Amino acid sequence: MNYEKIILELLDRIKTLEEKVEKLEKGQSLSDVDPRDPAAHQGRFTNSQRFERKVSLTQQARDYIMAAKATAKEEGDESITLLCNDIQIDLGVTNRTPCICTAMYDCMEPGDEVISAPPSGKSTTVKVKYYLK
Image (cartoon, rainbow, N blue to C red; front, side, top):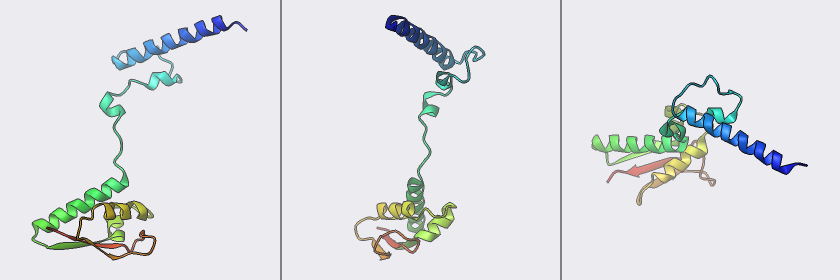
């Protein structure tokens, strides 16, 4: 086997891919780029778009809980009680109880109470009372 020839061929392919990626990053024409080439898909987005991630459901639930607590506090309430199933409904999801319960527990501060929960700690019936200090 002629390893030198194979290595030179691979290096040539890498160089071609690097050139294509560079063109894409500069926003130049994609007409000479093979769309089946995986490297052709790199560089089409800005760095912020490339690394942008969707917010997890758990984080969405945390944000929902924190917003609910803030609203209740603004209205002069001393506490707010939230039920996992109600949060799921408000977020428009089903069968995502573990994510919602995790968020509920994450948002607890010292003094807050778990009103009801099964032994597993995860159920649509999990109810937490948050005290608004």
